[in-house]
Image (cartoon, rainbow, N blue to C red; front, side, top):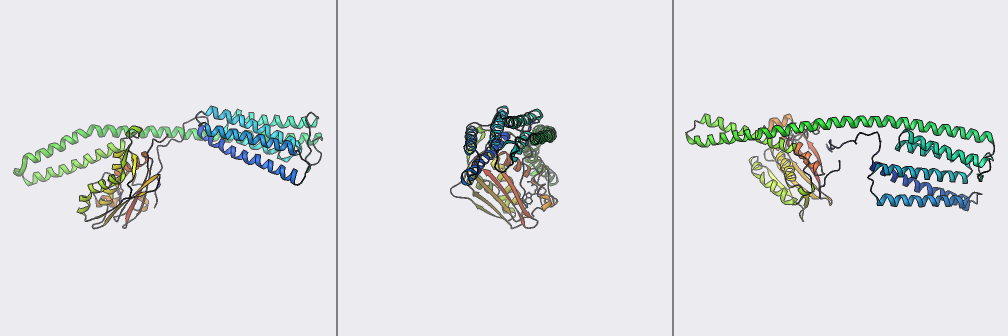
Length: 457
Ligand code: ADP
């Protein structure tokens, strides 16, 4: 089974009455630019085919000119978007408005040159109102709707009263001067536009309130998570020194007692040391787990990942030998150099290799591979051990989770190792996946970027 892990700390978006951020607005602007390219080239192609190819009596020059102006404007928008980063939402919103007004003007000119009220494409205004409802809030949506209504009504009456030239559409009847038709069309046009603006505003208001509620709930969850982490940090800090003192006290007692010590007393003290070492491991794991925010430029160093992996494997060869395990290591040549945080990378590798040894079968094999995939590096740690049931594969990355089988196989375990691995992998900008079959073995695959950088929150 694959287990792609998401980052639970990634905020949805700050709570706000605005539905968009500067970046998401820019992404939409880029999308509108693409639509505009299509629209402008489409108009020009149709005009060329109909007007020049089929010699239909249409306003070829005027229509081509409007298409060209649209192309020019779009080029300017594109250049501006490439040149300047989207940082200020107010600036981006202003730009969207300007673009929308220009689009509405261009559409009105195009309609004027192609039949005005006779042209069924007049409902293209609706698209603008829908787009406005995706980006703006109530009043602004209606501003766009009223502008569309004003422009089209002005054109239709302008043509009707002879104030503007009327370019008859060859496929339509001469209806631009029939008052009943003009009024009927304008009436339904007003109705559709205002209805779209109303429904759009209503839907988006609802969506925004859902998003705000989600953001508020997430803020509460994040605060609770932070409080839990602070508590862990406090506890680990406070119990570290008494545990260390107790451990060194028992060790000293053992040393001082020497051979004169009764075997039963020695046995009790040795078991006490074993338990205290376990407590120290838990404290260390908790300290690792609650460590955070250390991914800063100044903490990044160039690390020979080949060396780091071989050293981590060598450190655990004795442990592997106790279960007669074969350790295979496959490293790429030339070696992989990572820009990363050394001790985090060490902890990741050490924990995975340690698990592959502890949860292996007697005489089994551990294989550690490093694969260079260009911008990223893949670390694969494979064993032939007890495996992990499918329903548990999502749980093993949770703090303190240990499978029943693991608890029976190895009593020494905190259930924190993989939680730490996941946290560190994510902090370094990587991913972790597990693939496992019960009784056959497990494969953990970690992908890390060549250069870790601070995630943008
Ligand atoms: P620990 O090993 O201290 O219990 P981990 O967080 O490292 O804690 O692992 C959590 C659980 O995931 C383990 O208790 C075990 O059930 C399972 N697990 C981890 N690695 C392996 C592995 N290589 N093979 C089988 N089970 C594993």
